[in-house]
Image 1 (cartoon, rainbow, N blue to C red):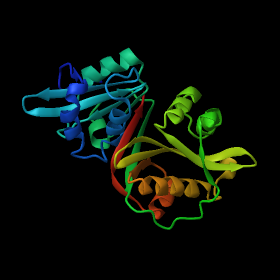
Image 2 (cartoon, rainbow, N blue to C red):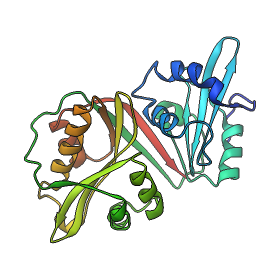
Image 3 (tube, rainbow, N blue to C red):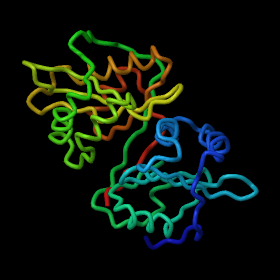
Length: 261
């Protein structure tokens, strides 16, 4: 990382920072959904995440979230922290950096892959198909769920035991379709918190595509989240996914960038 940013060590957050941090995040809750969801589900004492803020007597100017082996950066002012982030990358063997597209673009990473995604939100489900084939999967399905993800996403990071734990604790949920007893299409929600949820990992095995399974699965998960008062958000980068999501009522609200180191 070559370019200059704010050269300082950011403060690691604790429970006493929750109110100020939450107020900052809720200035744009959709953009900050990952952070809000992780804060809501894991707090400040979990081994899998750390939250750091750039704060002075004028308030919070930016933050960095370390969640497992990924980092999320945020600053409404466009501040960046290249030296601090570089230290976290080395310390935690970080593989992914992500955040709002224009902010992440200010960092100069040696990247294996740099993906620009659209960020969308759904406030009302439209054109819902029949969803009778869609079911909810549990912790006992974690291994098969992981295999579907890995077959579709070459850089899928989650391990079966991580999926199993998140489903057992009801931090995430996975919906999908089985054909002859085999899981062939799935969609996962994560970062669920009051009012919002994130859809991730929409995946269908190659030989079962173009049969409407992904559309049914996304529609069912979206419907259930909306019924619970949680507006779902998601990322996508390819035109096929765009047609599915937009036809169901998802509307673009921004751009997101994921850098794989």
